[in-house]
Length: 124
Image 1 (cartoon, rainbow, N blue to C red):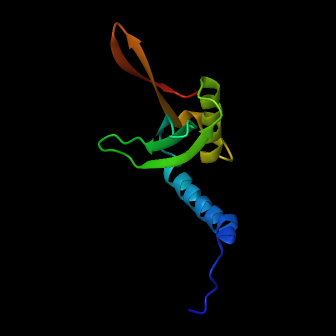
Image 2: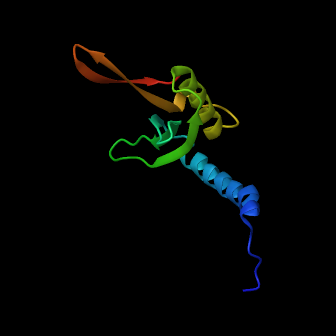
Image 3: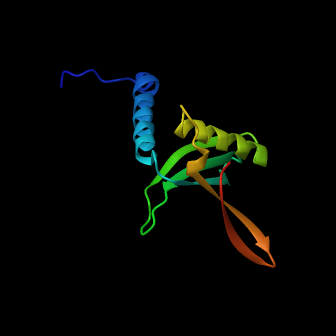
């Protein structure tokens, strides 16, 4: 074809990062000005590593909004401190210039009299 075939190293150092930045710019543009929900999914892989995924979505009134997988991280520990740090990282990934606390809704679960209730709060 006459085109240079890129090595794995070049792809890893340049192309993958460029693709990631393009996707993040597109995600930021789409969610700008919209209320979003944030979900952090924690799990343990087959090797015992703690994994955490951040998924966000836009809130729509009459129909489901668009959903984005923002990041997947390997955590040193699976505890509240690690999740809090991950939540802070999410805010800087999505809003690198100015964090928009007023636009993110988190979901907390708690038990009351044997029933699991969902309690929505504005993240602040």
